[in-house]
Image (cartoon, rainbow, N blue to C red; front, side, top):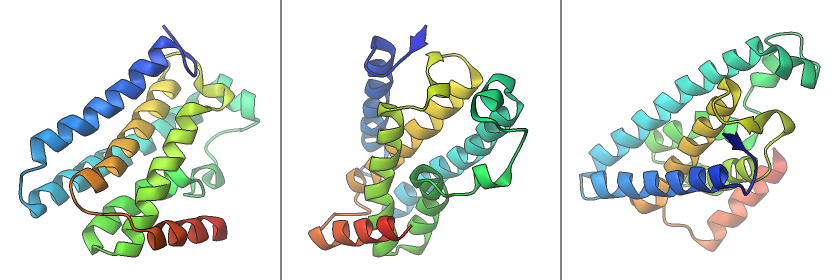
Length: 174
């Protein structure tokens, strides 16, 4: 089974992400804010752990390292300098601190970053869907999308126009 943008497996992945966000809303949407917050922070924590496991797999994947000229684990490739990496760190923080500005940034870039990554994956993230690097890539990005969607559906963030402007300016600054 190969995953390529816009093939059946890829569409199935997007469907799983949508179903995951819907199931999360159905399961905890009527719970107290405290429970909803804990559930999202827990999912984000699991995704944070999966992220580092996935990065470790990449540092052991010889063909991936050759493809990108990497010699091993390099901290500069792992720092949160991409929208997805930033959000893996910031979403639990934004939920814990209840800061609207952080939630706005996480909502807009948490939708945009992983969706762009899934729509146009780098060369190393296509092919056999069961390759560890592909599993790590699509699972972490999928969970990030589910949590970002859930910021809205579970009532933690209601976007306003000025929130979008703030997120755009902060993203441009980064």
